Length: 76
Image (cartoon, rainbow, N blue to C red):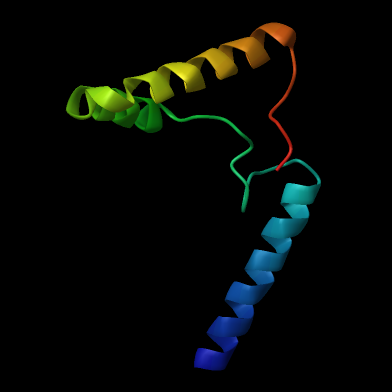
């Protein structure tokens, strides 16, 4: 029973990797898109650690430059 469940999970993982290669889903890579929750956490971090605020602003500038130029996410 446990072996069958393990094989099933492995097969599901392989199918998800195949779907990711075809561009249908994001499975192991985020695709470079930020989430709303991530943006909210950056704001909270900026309030709690004002000395690191410049890092948050630099990340926003880089995202804005990429959006304006029409480029996709940077390769990893």
